[in-house]
Image 1 (cartoon, helix red, strand yellow):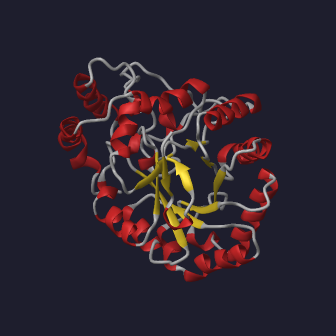
Image 2: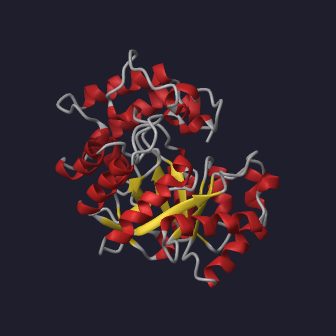
Image 3: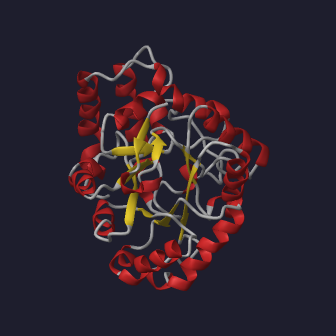
Length: 328
């Protein structure tokens, strides 16, 4: 495992970390505590020391599992969680300091931790980024010892740029992968100037970049890859990075042709992200242990050449950029 600094938190974290949206089993399958514990322990056993969760993942069961495992380990494991998506309807007016403080306190109870290493606003409406009182409230939580750092998880580059205007924002979690390249332009350079940790989420474009899907692949009725392709439930960009599924399959076929000897493209897609020094860590999800080990197999591959990276980028230019680059 290699480690990188998470911006001005000064945490030294595993560059391949763990996202826990589906840690208790695949989307739509319900939550299995045994599976969750096995996955998290496997990640830690292999050098992962940063785990990202959220209060809305399986109605708090993900947070509970993360806290349970972390408390059982002797290693220093950094826990990041999120708040805000419980607000229903999820609108600007619902964001109030007292509401968010209660969310943080509830997360502390579920995890059983005395302090949260990182609390992140969970993709709030754009208007929230223009309300200083929301960000100031987290300074009080820090003074009370309930959190160590504040970050944001965003949908759009514009939101990321606004968020880092607040001096107490230490990290930004943003969708970044071969099919979502816009953040690497202005945002990366601005974040670097302010020593902001960048956490790459949805790194495999909801599994599309593994190369394991085709036109016949089906998804469970409760899986967002089935019901959210048009953004019916939440931001369309969360599902397959917002690209048309069939178009994505065409792009992936060309990616496979670049790496004909590779059955699993996931480690290559992660390598592409790690080629950006501005990235602090990647948080791929996993619903079984083999997914964790697949993500960590990035270290078993030869380093991507600049020529290969250039060819990968050409696939983005050919198939993806025109449709999605300007949207997020």
